[in-house]
Image (cartoon, protein in one colour):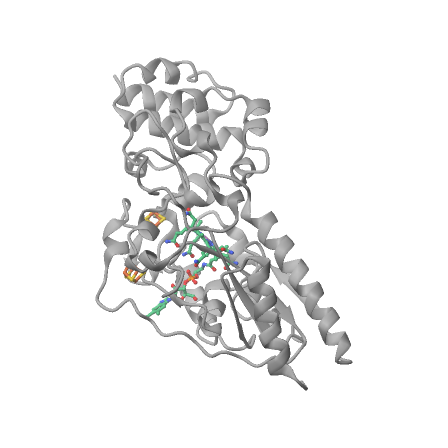
Length: 350
Ligand code: B12
Ligand code: SF4
Ligand code: SF4
């Protein structure tokens, strides 16, 4: 397009003004390695109960199939770097550890709003140059390979823990994208800077990495506590420790985080009551109180039963005798998975 470089420079400025930490561009067809690697992941069953990964793999593997008219993918990173030590709560016996990304507002809502505003801005600016731009915005839930696209655009590289890492902002960042029919200048890919480091692999409590860059999601605590329905394998329950929603161990281990600055959007800053919540208080939440307590939080979407299941596993792992009574109070719970988790916790504390 005419004046593409000028429009791109102003787009990047606009993205930073919106609060994104970085904005880079690639083509939809710049990730040719993805279909085969995704298929290997699916063939091994690493997606577990996430059947939606299998169902739409033809789109997830190839963005140009998802929207054939798209000519550019604008990749955005939104930092949620914590000010607190993300690992401080790990091992605090009577407390639950909530992943940093879920300690306050749901990023899906915040990132989506920013993406939509940026996309509207782009349409208006293109119009001024007599160009008709079509756009689609995505964050997390669509079948879009966000990490490989982020790498192709030059935002960062996929580290051995599989997440995108940047020299400037480390790995505490969400990704979002604006697909557009405009032909904007691209940035070019970032190169892998993991070198001989293996810190993230060594930090994983469940040995979920089959090899560097390859995660068996079925063993990942993030999958187990958020996505997995029903009882968790007994072998893995003990390894959850006090992690009750998501896991940050591999992210926290990455040395590139030392260059990151704290998130500018305060709506990601931890709510005081979620920095180290008491397991005894969380276990007794009923449906209504669970919804009220987690209103606006990503945790709300797992529902009371799965959340209380996680809390009971943490109680079982706590070694704190007085929490046994809390678990006993739930052995007759109406949800069979909660009742099973309560019985397991009682046994662990007996
Ligand atoms: C499914 C999913 C999960 C699953 C599976 C994770 C996974 N690694 O695949 C579970 C539930 C476990 C999960 C957990 C988390 N997730 Co998640 N998740 C997704 C989702 C929806 C799809 C990812 C996907 O397609 N996976 C399939 C696999 C096959 O793809 P892949 O990881 O890219 O695998 C590649 C590598 O294996 C690579 N590869 C294979 N072999 C080789 C060899 C070499 C040499 C190399 C270089 C590469 C390589 O090729 C594969 C294909 O590209 C994305 C959003 C999206 N739409 O992309 C968010 C997303 C990846 N998640 C995110 C986050 C924040 C998390 C957690 C940190 C949350 C938490 N704190 O609990 C954890 C991190 C766990 C981890 N170590 O990955 C962010 C990551 C942001 C970033 N900086 O990268 C994303 C992008 C959401 C977002 N919009 O911000 N997640
Ligand atoms: S999120 Fe936790 S369990 Fe999952 S791979 Fe990273 S360290 Fe392992
Ligand atoms: S911890 Fe080391 S190996 Fe893992 S992503 Fe960071 S630099 Fe790469």
